Length: 639
View 1: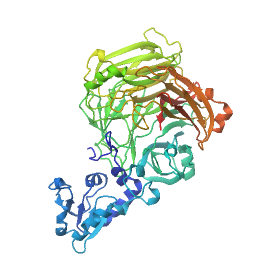
View 2: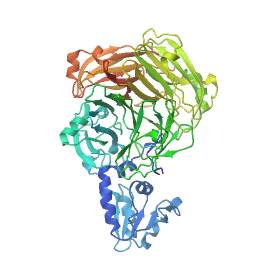
View 3: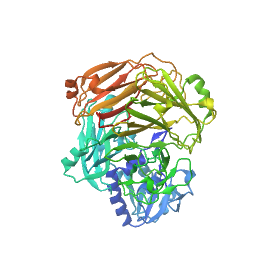
View 4: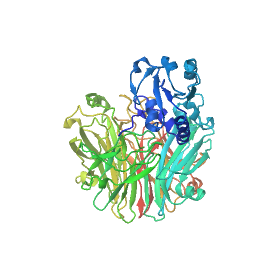
């Protein structure tokens, strides 16, 4: 059963009310408030702001004796709300309630408007009774300001010689934030609180490292796996906590990475691969809310097929569970892929693949959009936008790695997909083209780059591929602008592997179409780059990989004018290195190749590389590598 709450809209952005009533501290206050109301006699609920439905989804109101529900909007009079016929608030004087609760924050004016209508002896309460302390707010004057709830969830584990490391930067400082700090709470798999603490941040664009081994030692914890809730206080510019997360182990073969959790729980997620023979896929589901997820509320279906098989496992509030997709679909094998019916219960899930000999890797599925429609104007626009929507991904050195691409439907509108893969050498020269044709929604077709070259070569030894629409194949009325793919990399020598996935955008063109070329800061077109590259040299014998790609929907500057800025943990700049990436090409490099060792040593303890370019939009993938042992790879994020 899906939660009937608003979390995110591509037109509006994120909604704050569900975060406000679902915050761990607020949840504790709500428990106390509802317990008091349950013993106080009949209760009337007044819903002037339309938030009652969300409150009831995230908190159990069944213990309350609700005698009336009142509304302000005339068009809502007569609605069935929690089993009561909504009455106009002008009839409040007739209620038998001993307590009236206004379901809203910043509700002082709403309270003043109805105070004279209260029956004699009735108490008036609002949700302001459970608001966070002002010390935890960025903007105390507007409680539901999205910046007051710059939060996210992270998967954190420290057990069996396996550790987790979250890395990010205080990018809010670049938007004028000062005195920023993080409020954090660590939950175990059952939603029990393991630790709560605050961490102040430097005012510079400083590095942030949250390591499970250090946290476990600091708080004297036993082995754990669970959710770290992160709340950035004092945020500016972004109301999301972005981060990269690495998993590493006491065994050198344990090394993997993935992306942030996405702060808004979604109805659907897609891009979950089935296991290969000899593998096991584990899906980590993290409950984003204080209310439990009922058994059977979340399920899987084979992409493009109607049969949904539910997980018969409940998940406690703020808890998490490791589930096995093969228990529901024992006969499916890679490249089969699943759609997750999540019902807005969980943040973007991680999946973990165990391939024996501790060759574990972690990755994430993606939000499947439910608000799109197939749009023939996309094909028409492509006459002006050249290649149009491009999804770039690395082809790692062919002599050592196998690089796979699997198109993944990522919107409910995508019934047919006219798609092709274009393979480029690192210098930007096209080497081969693979036409998938028109893929049906239930098709799962993966290609391997070396085979797709069909005898051609990459003189540089590596390059990249681009998934783009193929309107020559037909179905020019089928595109929805949300082209996605899953990319897999296998080391031929060690057997280690990495998964990553992302979606397409229009890159490096002056003409705009419905928000493309996308810009992280300001209106389109986005024609500049600011990417965060975390460093892994704090870990033993680990170097940092970066694969920068310069995709161009239409011809742009012949080469990029990229600057790599090695930055210390406190945000101070240590060293600068220029880098030129050819238009339509890519560059694969290591931190140890771009910076001197003594400079890298100065960046230990949270330093990073800022990748900056004011002339073009680059797309990047980051990873860590222990030569001859293990590596990781995932897409980068910008700010």
